[in-house]
Length: 511
Length: 90
Image 1 (cartoon, each protein chain N blue to C red):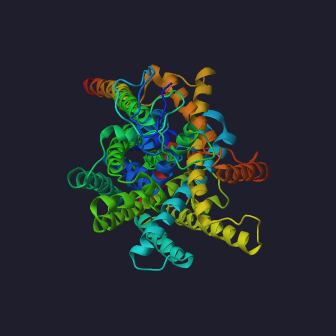
Image 2: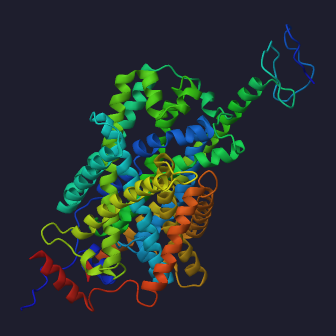
Image 3: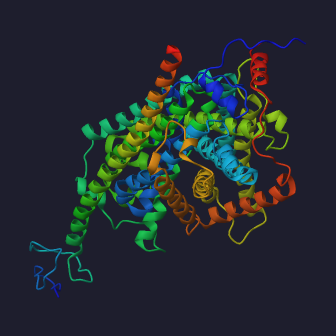
């Protein structure tokens, strides 16, 4: 077989990727806005703020919206900035996993990868199952588990097909999703501002409302931060799609950072207006979905139903981006032989230049998680446990797991970077163009402190179930590591020994 | 300490830093002897100040981090532009 000659001189993005030993297998077609849009869609203020609005309101009342949201935004900005710096320095799809491997060795990389994967899969499950629960009654179907699962399967299937057929269509949909989210928020805010009666602004700081009776108010308030913290997950998507982004070392870090900053602004405006429209705080808190209840009370049931559709569509967009992010993570980890049957999951569709097998695996794992939860609920009832589990009790646990899993996987590379700086292994020369310079260390320290704080907070009562499930998952990971990965997993492996070989691989894919 | 007398308006017999005005009141007293609705309204006012301060802090922090990163990006771009022009003049 004749070796095909490289068609053209590689551009800066490809050259950077080659320096890390990887060929440009995925289609690099995303611009800066698309990269921002994918993270902004996963953060999805309409999804996170709406579905968990009741959690925040019940925990601490309006103060969770007026003080809690900006407080969480403040710290998450530090986490985003610290991750953005690393994305600029090491622009590969593996992102967190790859950073941890280079900074701390293969073992750290392996654990980071699995924590990230657990978090991402739990996010797909949480978002898409939530979407199914919203869409089922809107379609006029009965709210049974069987119907939820049929709709859930259909949603996942649509995400898989779109992600399979190309990043171009997914990127366009994400661009639309970003604009859709902004317009959605403006419609809700505009309607409330012009047509709804409102409480005075100081009412936003009504401090004494809580339905949590077992703990002091301040502790309940901290528990309510889960609402904002869960919303701010998944913005590592900009880093996972970095091999598909043009001008990656600058566009992707901005994508990470700006998605958090813009979500912070629009999220606060929306939450403030919705909270000011509350007529009866107690009735709103006890409603099945307080957000929709408040809108129905303020603007009528027709508007409430319309917003329900807006939110459901936003959730669908959010799930689509989650599948994109998870599939890129699986692809990158499998490319370095980190997964069982890695060769299969590292495969790239020649026709569409997407990690097709990884897309379908991400969707399958996303489907499996709620199935396991439902299975556990049914078993606990059939075996007549003293306290059988309820789905409504386990679903927030899935949300908690996605938050903790993702944030631990964000925290590990940040901690390893600080360790590398202290050991003199990492110098400013290793930074990419998107760099915080002398602020880097304090920003990393604040980010790590926040991650440590929320990890502990979200496994304390009343979230002990999350702690137990996550603890079990961690124990399983440790066992898996010693059985299957220790000594075998080598960390990032260059795909070729020379750049010309990488160019040949690329030319072969393009044929 | 103040106390509630059935059938009569509430009379303030104490100094409470949270109270600046006196008016008839029908709510119960808290431990300090302040009517709880006054305490609540004061808390709301403090909350408003804290909230506004927090929003300013978050905005400043977001702007400062972004500006710092942007300076790094501009430096990188100018360095690369220089290297390109040097290469071009050789």
